[in-house]
Length: 265
Image 1: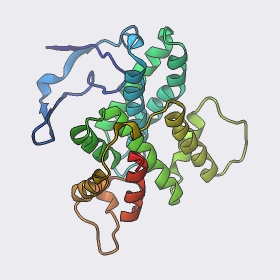
Image 2: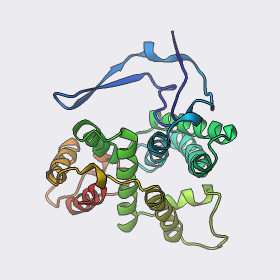
Image 3: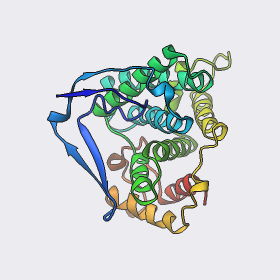
Image 4: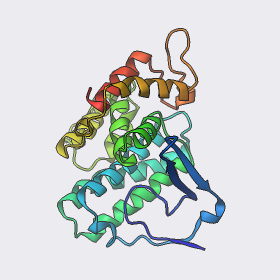
């Protein structure tokens, strides 16, 4: 029997039955996926993640935060997954700056743990978007932590979706605690506020892949990888959104822009 006690607020392994390992030679992630891995008991002890280094806190927590958004705004989301996503986002987004500022507050950490737990519950009832595919590539080919790669990739996908006219992220506006006391904001303005503040998290915590010195050749490799993953583009170079789970259709040129921003190349 498995008893799970998580040490980060990210992977949600205490809820899932997947065990992941990477074949470094073939650069493929494999898994031990069996119901025998399901924990019969999970213990969320806030004292454990409270002792984590800052980079572990950021990488794991931001990965869970982006997962909560990703699972909420894709083609496979539903009423059940949305309930989990909303509560996950609310707990993670509002408590992450608190635990970074005051690491010894166990109430904040408990909220973070539940937020990570609920983000996996959302994923198990929905799916993630194309950012997860890029994070997969970065972790297997460039040794970038999964949570960090997913967070950065997800935020730039959200930004591009917003710029292309998708303003569904406005639904997150009311879940944010510290926001301007303004009334009658449009969906576009609310969505813009959410995207701006997600980008602000990256900038404020200096989260970038620039220091990883990933060769520029990977830009084309990632593009080829993601296009291959979601079948092929049609005659107009449109990614089939149903295959990628992205809420809107994106063109090849959009992906090129997103990849450049992720790698800062």
